[in-house]
Length: 104
Image (cartoon, rainbow, N blue to C red):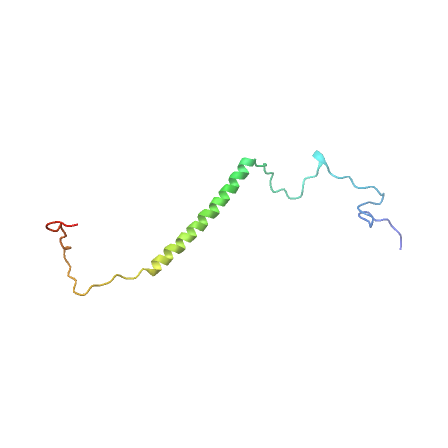
């Protein structure tokens, strides 16, 4: 067959048939990527610190709420019905007043 020089990468690196390296994109001449998902602004140190504090506070609040929910569940589960006294009559409570003569 014919010995035709190939274009593209060779065993020695990224060289074309002329032996020159392809130009690299630098600075403002850089080619835009295929998929651009948005250009985000860099956040400042105060915004980053507030994000960390908000995240930690959220974790503390969620864990505290779950611990409180488990505690309420355990207490509610252990509550038993009241005691019924035999011979108790419905009516006003007995009058409780001071004793005559007083004492210490």
